[in-house]
Length: 369
Image (cartoon, rainbow, N blue to C red; front, side, top):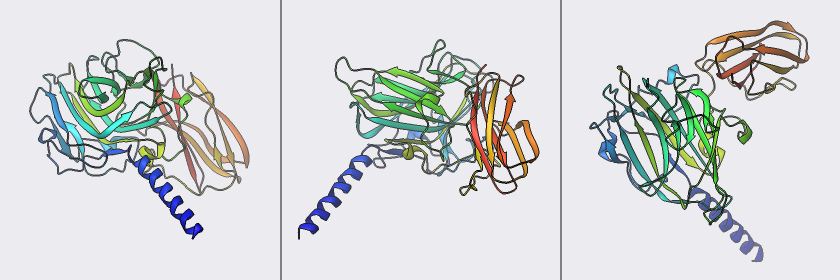
């Protein structure tokens, strides 16, 4: 009888723990019929949300609709699994300001030690003027902006922090908005809302490997410190500013929030187009992270081969174009090193892939000039 009671208590403890974790999770895949407009209050309560999307400001009616073609999945460097369509704006050459919000099911509090993750697939086109901004924002209530992930106002780079970025700083990445689509992932570390508490921190990565381990904050592409006050309970999608003659266009998909890396990455596992991930790699076949990383202009790549045989080590840009072949031939088993020089390449994210007749491994590196 005592054992039964203990087991019951353990089961309840697990249930409470799982329920508690599930309280802080939200997902929006824009899985609605093609042509559905966000102005129609699409969505509803459930799946972590407290209600549907609602319009805050929109200078043109029905400017954002669900599409199954606007997010150019085939053009990205990743084969991105997704559910349903994406939320995409209609190109507008006159300039547009759009702000849409959605309430979470509850306040996500600024409790000391709390960690929140948020991710979104995003693409920006024709933002020829740097005064354009575009991204996903956190709000505490309907009027208190807490933070943003996206293309910062005043710059041509992806940023984190507030919507306005008039200069350089750690919150500004080295990745241009033209490199899309991208998978923006951010880790927010809360320090508490008490008076005198340290500022909260946001660490943002641009297209990290979702099938890998949780990325380290030291490798973040951008980071910032700010205050979430009492927490956040509203998520917004916003863009606006001056645009070029072709008309500004923005697309969003797979917006997720959670408390762990797995909450935002578990169903992705996307990798550069044409690259097959091998889950059962042979012993002693390894590709190590380049060093230094980020680098300028050269970096050392180390790898290990189990057997003597033909290998190929090549470098690709973010849209899958091959930019360098470092090794292409027969090499002996054991550890090898090669130096990659990027004197003639622009700053940005690159991928290096090691291939044998049996397996392949791919890793990401960052060139910062």
